[in-house]
Amino acid sequence: MNRDVVVTPTRAAFAAGLALALTAAVPALASAPAGASESPSGAVPAASLTPAAAPVPGTTAAAPAAAKKRNRTPDIRPTTERGSGLVGRTAVYGGRVRNHTAGQRVRLEVRRGSAWRAIDRDVVAKNGRFRVSTEIAKIGDRSARLRIVSNSRGKGDIERVERIHGFRSAYASYYGPGLYGGALACGGTLSPGTIGVAHKTLPCGTKLTLRKGNRQVQARVVDRGPYIAGREFDLTAATKYRLGFGSTGTVQVDR
Image 1 (spheres, rainbow, N blue to C red):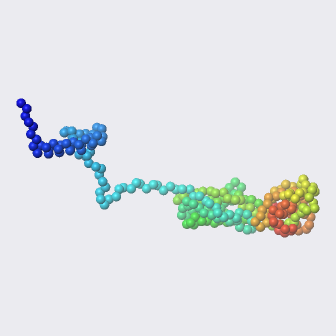
Image 2 (tube, one colour):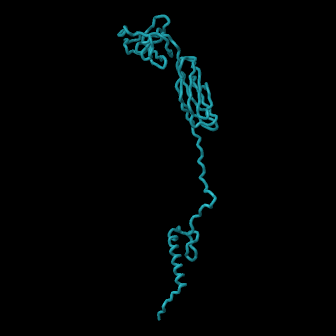
Image 3 (cartoon, rainbow, N blue to C red):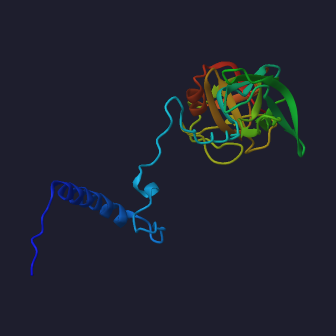
């Protein structure tokens, strides 16, 4: 004999609550990690159903550890150089140092034999500026360099600079017109385009640098002369024009 099932309001409410609980539990079971322990009744542990803990109000999350400051090598940037001039004048080197540390010094060094010798020093300013100088002691070249000295706070750096180049004054004249096509004492013939000088004693082919104001010319000894008292060099016409030289006067020469 079949009995009719009577659903009372209390039973209906209980069934609805159970269905709602199962509906919420199924997604949680699906996302639970494998091997997670279950309670004896098969329900998902309460910890797996609760959201991640939020920071407590009034507190801040821990910041990542600050990156360790790297000790970068200083970098010398020369901006002004006057490394050449008459013997007895001053050669000046200035510029800026990047990545410098407090108390670092810049040294101007010159090579003597196989060693470098410091001849001037300057403490790097807060803005990185420095200035060093030395007397131009002789005619011709001297190798020079700028160097930052290492200290307990920073490394050093070396930047090669122009050579220190000494000149002397000499009285000169020029020649050429009317002599083109003639033989030169050192070989060849004189032409309007010949770059060179005449000198009474310097060996033929000797290289030298001539300066007049802001102009400079590299030349060789190509002829003999001049034979007028008080004049040391005769410039060819092409050399004269490149220097902006007149008919007679003083030039700077490194021989």
